[in-house]
Image: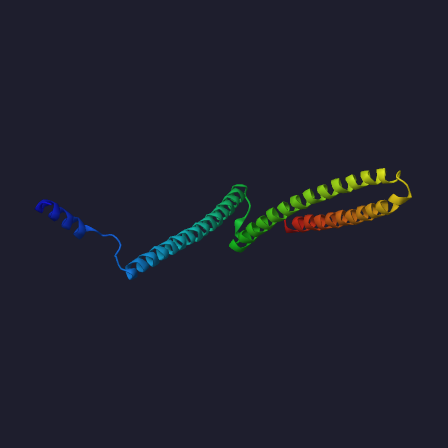
Length: 173
């Protein structure tokens, strides 16, 4: 080995920033890697929180812009805006949000009612076939009729709640 090779190896060893060769060093490196992962996870969580806050702020500002546009349109239409204060405008925005939520709920309930009606129609169709099989099947027919009646009562209850939601939404307007 030449002096140059020895010098080159010594220089490489002095420049090594690799992990320490002791057990404590290896454990320390693993702990720092684990804490680095925890930090990265925390950073992602905090960024998500900040993003949600920014989205909420954006939604609030959009609602304010809508309210301003509404008041500007009212002003252009000649409506006296002195009677409308900021609280009224904010309340209108809240009511519009509630109305949208109620409309969404009504849509969901209508879908549920339609599904229950389809199921009731299917059971009714099945009951039509149950009548011609004899005395042994009377128990099955009775069970199907009871289930059909229970489903019909559920449909009626959901229609009642739907009507109540519609009335509540109409009252909120």
